Length: 601
Image 1 (tube, one colour):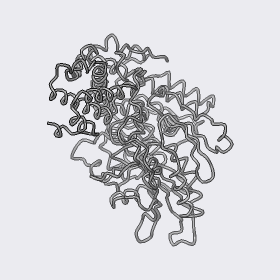
Image 2 (cartoon, rainbow, N blue to C red):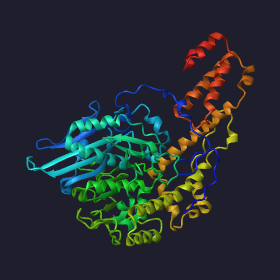
Image 3 (cartoon, one colour):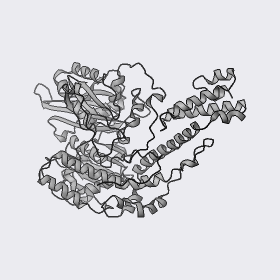
Image 4 (cartoon, helix red, strand yellow):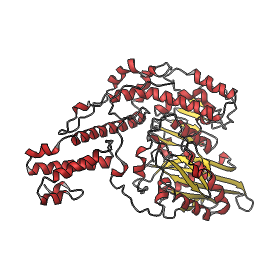
């Protein structure tokens, strides 16, 4: 389905919704503060990708325990180590024999600010909003091995290799672990040290770049997504002829999970689940194993992409989690969070939650799931209950039978799983864009006209968001322009405007638009003939102008305002020119970098 592009002011950035960006480019990377060439310290490059790598083993007396943290200089609080220990092993009822991979997410210790790679914040400026590193949480990517071993008292070898990172690159880290973990289990710590040293030689994950990453004798080729990529397209890593012979693994995506595999057990309800995630409703995924729970939770979170899911989500959650009491209490309404669980205890503990997805063993892609109705919550007694969706929720939109028929036909014709995944991902993208475009169009109208920007007055304010005014726009420019779905779109919008996802989205849009106004104001200043203006200024007024221009320059560099490429150099020239009209003693003071206002007041 093709989407008509809504009319919008040419100066407005719309980079999260997937609408075209303006022709104004961001500040050149080299113009930002603190981004000059710096000497690299040990583990700086490693820190761009990972916080640390842990080995978690099972001790008969201590239970799960962190045996190794690498690099040894990595800092983890005791609380974080406990979280990693419990989350790195499947629940005993899961019965995961052999090798198992899954993902978890947990809160970073309160008040702790671990230094990230010196350039990471700068590098992520062009990353899609839903792929930026998470400053408040860590992701844990697990490779767990459980095999029989008669030489051990317990009778089993149980160990997990865990990569801790702030990056949500689930497909990349799972692929990386498939290369490293089997070698580690054979050769132990020297192998892990060698792998970490390889990672410390990698280039940083710069959005839009294709990278060749050597690891343990092979080369992984990946492309890091950029906010300028067209939504719904996968930019496959481009081949470099000289490296082709060495490349062993080419990943089509660093972050996407197989949506069709995730939703296959409940795909008759995909539209309802999309609404629940969009509205930030409390949602529990009950699954037989951490692999299936984590994959399904990540699939749910990504189904509203490119909109960022702004609430908490836990791909694998256990009774030992530090937020267990907070999320399971019956004294208040369940929070806006998506939990993935495997322990049967949760069937009773979370029975009061309004929406529960019960996943059976994930079947092969060729198996055709049976259609099941949404079940009543009172029927969910144990984790052994039949797979399905348990909820009293009534969707706002009418069911889209066409997508169901298309996916069913694919199963009958044994269409490749990758093709089914692409169809479902495209469906969710179009649904989300149909929903978000009217909001983008209305928010664009809150932007003051460019002609109202005066270089000698403060930038104008954005108009306030009015729910009723927005609702009035839907009659002519609502989602009916781009979606065939009928139903209560107005009711869905009213509910969404009270959700954490709207709050997160609007905060980001308001910040972008405010920065755009600041950038336009700065460009208007640069277009002025300052030498002519200061002819009638007193010396004090001229110094005051210089200080204000320096403040503007520092703000533009600090906040990386989206100004034209030459704007900052023009502003520096203006500042130097104005300073040149002052007496030499003042010139010496004002030409010093970062002159504080107090120095000349």
